[in-house]
Image 1 (cartoon, rainbow, N blue to C red):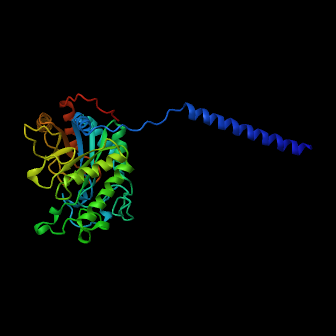
Image 2 (cartoon, one colour):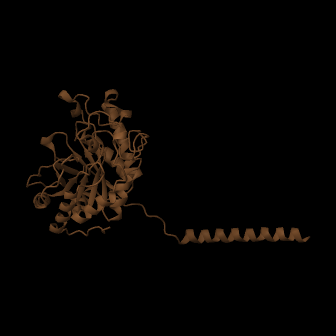
Image 3 (tube, rainbow, N blue to C red):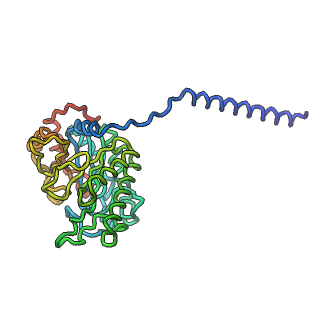
Length: 350
């Protein structure tokens, strides 16, 4: 055998030996590596009990309404209007939550405007629209910031209730993106669209533990259908918990999904069902010109009453058009943190 052939043969043998060695190493790794354990699904009562231990969270109303000087946005405004003029400092939101002693946050991923703060498969009416100057996933930013500080994350989603079309408001508030404009889609079609978007959020953001459903009640679907939907979500993502805020003010707080919700009202003293009381730190849910924080002591009084009535306390802040929480609210949250003595461990500070 000449020298060149000998070198080729030696090279082939070396490559074969390396392949055998690699295969043996892979087999050893597979044999010694621990298999991934499936997530154990908790009973709903345990999920409710775990939720109640969280005690205190931050509600964040920030969406198209922030830029329109409105609480409920009518029609479809241009995505160009969603323009904070720079990067939204979600880290500062999380730091403010930590300073107050909060343990979780809930962001308005889709409110009445129909505008989505994530890149949704089902609509172009979102932060990644060609006309939107921001072009960043606000939901992902929010989750990263809160999770990095040891805080749990939830997402608010507004369902389109038939009550939106009553009286003089008929057709005024769209609520759903243009791809499912209520003027051209039945309630059943609207529900299917909304279910798909919530399933998308759960799959896209596996750190989400809580879905806050606004205006979801029997006017949209019977309780058994709503529970079937949530159970379907849990089959994909075990241990998700869901609240529901009734359209009818007289029925708010009444159990429908896992957690009952009250808006700026307290549950009765006799309440035994797990609840969440939502309150505003500023005057309105969304920021408007002149927004300022209320009294920290007043907030503490409401929080104590909520806790005594088997309810978490979800305190709303409305970041300004810059995406920043107003200074008076930053100070009030820090003061609340000094007054509030939670039993749960706070998340790490920045």
